[in-house]
Image (cartoon, rainbow, N blue to C red; front, side, top):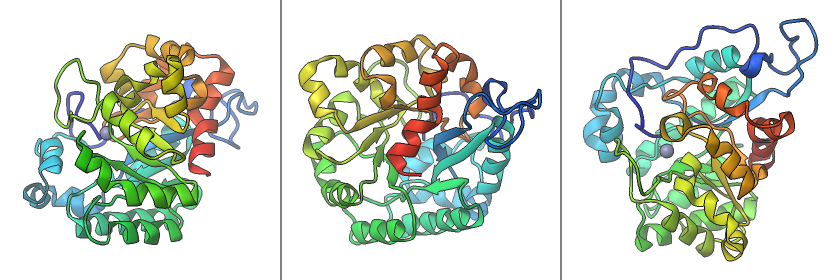
Length: 313
Ligand SMILES: [Zn+2]
């Protein structure tokens, strides 16, 4: 979830390529030459989905949530239903997407969002792995997460707490349940420098590191490269604190040049990086060129193997 770039109407569309990312076909399908795919199919670890009702009536949701309004008041800000996500996955050679709705401040809206994600997971078994959205601190938030995990969801997120101590404390019950289930919590994070954009929050590397310190043993996935937190894995004491932390690439093409992939490799290590597109903001295809700087093994880890391990899919 991020308004880092210019908006356009409807989900970003990718013309159907001969294969998926890097010209590679989805798992099990022959490549353009008829040979088996040289690289495994991708997992996209960061995709937002919205029910047709929310897409059609987005204006009615705007007054109900300030963050939703910040990101989606502009009618050109893209939203996608599960079916639209599936079509884009097929175009891009993505086998599985980790999907979630929006972390409304209203627990009832979160529940409705989660119901749609559960429906979509059931309709597309093996293609969509859901995360639950809850309103941390609201009555029933942990019970709602438990309901979603019991129904097969693979974690919680993308939540967007502010960077304060109170917000971190509200996450304690959620983080505890996820630790018990060995499933991750995905948190939106922003770089503390650089350009402003809708949705840019005060949850930066310091707040992210404080969460890692507060919830050892809970797998944390920090979206948007953790706002740069990965760099501090080069400090031995931070590497220990960040042992259970991962970083996703969501919105990377709007924020960094491709040299950042090598920076992750040199600091946190590629085993901690998850490819995530932030669709419908950006298509998975927009990441292809940048990821070419990695070795095939590194790309296989970032674009699939790491996410399969973290989300246990
Ligand atoms: Zn985000």
